[in-house]
Length: 626
Image: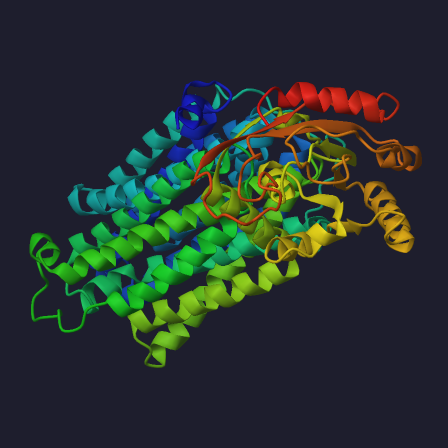
């Protein structure tokens, strides 16, 4: 994992990381300090009940996301994002001055105003936070960068929450809370000054101050790409799911585990560490590219461990006095609860990091910040709906463990719905799982596959698993042209059918099918898709590269798109190859995790991509290993 941690030494990323970390830390320091202060000293400030004050504070903090996210997205598309980051840090210092005034005047309205402004600070920084990364990071760094941001944000939330509680209970005068917040904001400003320039993609943009019409427009930008929009819905669902669990930790610790305040901290810390571990593992598990196959993997874990938390929740631990932390940890049932929370965090990292990276990669540069602003609005909306739903269910008599179990079941239903609408997620998961379960895949030259636009991918044909291996390595979906008999193969055929593969037959076998295949290929390329072909026509029977047939010439004559040569090696002799005359006869004939390589060459023009030239390029890429 040295690659992603190496970003922390880079000026392209480190100052920005520190800036956002300190911002998240400060938000939670002030918010939790204020909540703790109002909870334990409510009579000095107001006649309102402490519970009502805590919920009012949460609502006031999240309100700016609804009111100003649309404007924040426009600002991030119109102006340099590094400059905006510095201005947001200046605003943060001013806000701490407002908070100090509220403490000195002993004014609850002024303090709530400062909390509202902190919400505005986070709202303005949100689109900058995610839209700046594609400008400063390379494509193979995006997953690692997002992993660090997500892990850092949750760690900042944890430390800020703890620091806020400690400050509220230890300082002689509450104004010191604002002083501490100002010091953090000033440190954030200093780090922001080192963020490299991130020029505006749409400097001529006219700002629309109407939050309602602009919010609708931002969501419309996202809806232009169905995968992006459903990724945003997935991100928003994760925040609903995660916020629902986090909100119940205090009551769960007290009324289910029978613990005290330290047990709440323990639950939050375990969940946060899990998020960090899952986020950090994403880069290694995805091979440094946006692997959306991890998203279904994450949703499976979120469901399984959410359900197990329901079954693992102990009964009969609540006594007349709270358990000390060490006494609580001596109870075996608690360790299963902690394990479930840890794994919820781990699989949450698998779920959220690829989704954020996917939104960044597939959103158009000129709309990216506004699409992220729309995402922030939906995140806030989902969290509010989740909080209201949880309050209603708990008020109706549902237990907290049962709420966790119900949320896990709903997570499964949402996952099935999203993957049904966009099979790409599930298919990438199947391809990723098959490749990881059977092979140890090494890739090179993946960057030659274009991030956008049409291209024809040409590869040698060694086994029935060739298309699955290439799909698992490609950063974009590929529509493969394949022999109709392979298209009907059990299990693999399911993957091929649902990823839009195009079956083809020879003119002798079925001329109608052959012509229909060429028409479909032309439509796919005209639509800007990637199309993959195996010009040999059949899987090799001796492991050697066969003659390339002229179908590639006909395809390029109709659609002269760039051609990307690629070569597979190491699959000859595998279960899916015809090494014994017929494939798939002897399971595990080479054992598990055998070495397989995919080498991708530089793009060729349509004119240069003759069958003979392509065969020479593919053979050179493959080398001596079949």
